[in-house]
Amino acid sequence: MSIITVGIDLAKNVFAVHGVDDNGKAALVKPKVSREHLLPLMAQLPPCVIGMEACSGAHHWARLFRQYGHTVKLMAPKFVTPYRMSGKRGKNDAADAQAICEAVRRPHMRFVPVKEEHQQIILCLHRTRNGFVEERTATYNRLRGLISEFSIVLPQKIANLRRDIILHLEDLPGYVNQCVGDLLAHADALEVRIADYDRIIAKAARDDARSKRLMKLPGIGPNTASAMLASIGGGHDFKNGRQVAAWIGLTPGQYSSGGKARLGRITKAGDRYLRSLLVMGARAVLSGLGDKQDRFSRWARSLQERRGYWKAVVAIAAKNARLAWAVLKFGDEFRLSPSAA
Image 1: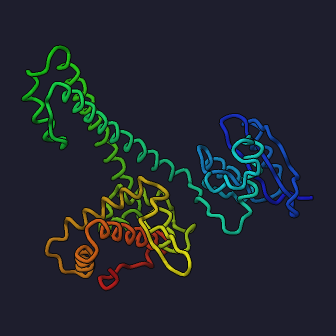
Image 2 (image 1 turned 135 degrees about the vertical axis):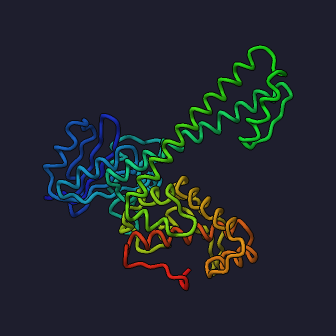
Image 3 (image 1 turned 90 degrees about the horizontal axis):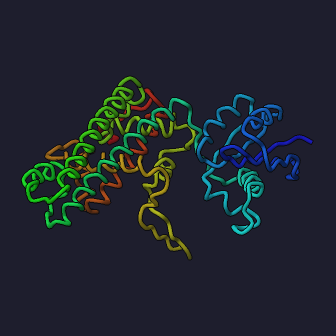
């Protein structure tokens, strides 16, 4: 009796495997499989569907399993939880593998696109740069909080903070001067790191033809283009641009019942970093409208007047997500004409 579906609960060293046949009966139950034995075990199986949670190492294992003819599908962990039979109190690796095997067989399950190695390399650049940005923000906030203990309150803008703090150094007692100097030096080092990663990401975007096409869209620069390309690849895992916008979390949540449609705030699902890049790009579009009279600018200006600033920002970000999918999916066949903007 052949195995057609396998669920794997990923871990660092010990994995759990649960496989079922075409009747849905368990045909392969291995609650403990070591890391070195997992790939040989999957290699000896006939081509089947393998389900895993989208967690650390999932994309790497997916690429390895595909080499042996398997179809690999990744799912967000929150979509697997309802299929765990014993609930939270009975959670264990074997139950997780069984739940994954059950979830991957559902016809309406939503899956995560498997990323290639080069996509993960670019995302590593973005994650590292974003970590430095967050650390820089935390450093300046720590600096502002420390000196506020001595009744010195400075503006939040970094340029003004660095300018004004020099005037108050003599007012700081004891070793506080050294603390301030060390924090400023650490922030300077982070600035250099961030600038280095900006250059690397910009170069990677300029060297890729697909990223260059994305950067022709309004509000999409090198960072957004490379992050979008690394996140969705060629866009073949999505049926249309609306699915991409929903996957990023830029579409309104629906609370409809009794034949009455109710649309709320955006869902904010998916990748928060990618969503923030699109939103920042949309804000740049609105701030740079000026007196432009092309069709896109008139639409954005009218939208802002009718619906307000933030709704216009989200609408532009969602539109850019859809256009980006079309650019990646159809390539040179897609042309954004002025009448389509």
